[in-house]
Length: 448
Image (cartoon, rainbow, N blue to C red):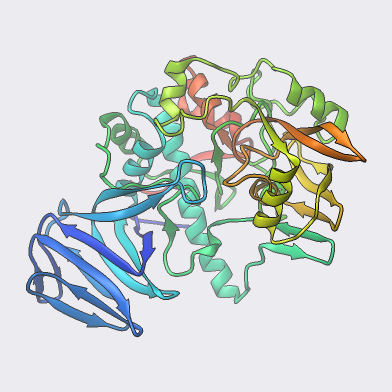
C-alpha cells in the first residue's frame, strides 16, 4: 500500500430505527444549510426522513451532512458501547467530521467520516488513560494505524477477487466460527470493541494521546511489502496466541506466540497445547509482565468500567447445572439437556481452547474458535477460552456445579495491553514494545 497522505475513514457508529442528534455548529448538504439545533432521522416505508425545526429531507439512499469547518461537531444520543459485553450501556457521544445516514436492515445507520489521524487520537484516548506512559501510547498508535490500514487493504483484495469471506466451518457435530471486521460491508470499521473503541471527542482527547499519534504519524508495522494485521487484547495471561488460532486459518509471521517476559520476543518455554502443561500454567501464577496488581499501571489501560473487572490475569467462574445448561441452550440455540462434561480437544500456544467438546444428556457438539466458546459459556463474553474445568456435587454422573478456572482477558493475540503498560513503566521504548509482541515486523513510515 502506497499513500501520499492520510485517508478519510467511514466509521459505523450506531444503527437504530430512529436516530436523534444535535448539531453544535453549522453543517450543510450541498447548498442546503443546517443550523445549530436538534434533529432526527428515521426510516419509514424504506425512506429515510430527516427532520429539524425548519427542515425536512427525504431520501431512499443516503443523507450526507458535511461540516462547514473541520472543527465543527455534532452529538449523537443513545449510542450503545460495549455491545454484548458485561459493561454494555448507552451514552451520548460527540464527534467532529461529517455525518452520513444510510438504510441498513430496517434501521438507520450513522456513519462518521473522519481523517485517520484524528480517528486514532480518539481511539488511543478511548482505549488508554491519559496517564499512560508516552511509549505505550506511541506503540498503541502504531498498532491501531497498522491494523486499520491492513483491513482497508484486505477489503480491497477480497472485493477484487470476488470472494465471499468465510468465517465458519459447520458440520452435523461441530461448529467453528471466528469473528472479524469483514462483517462490515457498508463502512470501514465500527466504533465498538469489535473493531477499535472509538468515541469521537466524547472524552477529552488527551494531550499525551495526541502527541503519541503526532509523533508516529504515518508509522506502521510491515512484513515485506504488506502492512501488518496487528492485533491487541487486554491480557494475554502470560503467553500470546497465534493469529490462525483466533481468526482465519492463515498464519502471520509477525503474530506468533511469545512469552510475556524477558528476553523480549522469546517463544513459549512451556507447551500449553498439552493438557497437563496448560492446567499447570493456568492454575499457576507465572512471573510475566501482565501479572500485575499495580493500580497505577492498570489505570493506564483500563477505563473505569473496565476496572470493575479485577481478576483478569487469573479468574474463576462457577455455574450451577441449571444455570449453565440454560445458558448454553440460550447462547448456542442447541438443547444439550443437562451438561455432563466440557472437554478441551485442542488448545493454542497460550493455553486457549480452540475446540471444546460439550457433552449433554441430549446432545454432544464441538464448538470453536475461542470467541465462540466464550460466547456460549457466558451471558456476555467469558474472559478468555484459556480455562480448565472441574466438577462438584455429582449425582448420577451429572455435576451440580461446573467450575471454570481461567487465564487472561481477550483473544490473547498480538500486543498484551497490560503487559505493554508494565513494559512502558519499566522504561522500554515503543519500538522495543512492538518488537516484543510482533516478531519479524519492521517499523515503516508510510506517509508524513
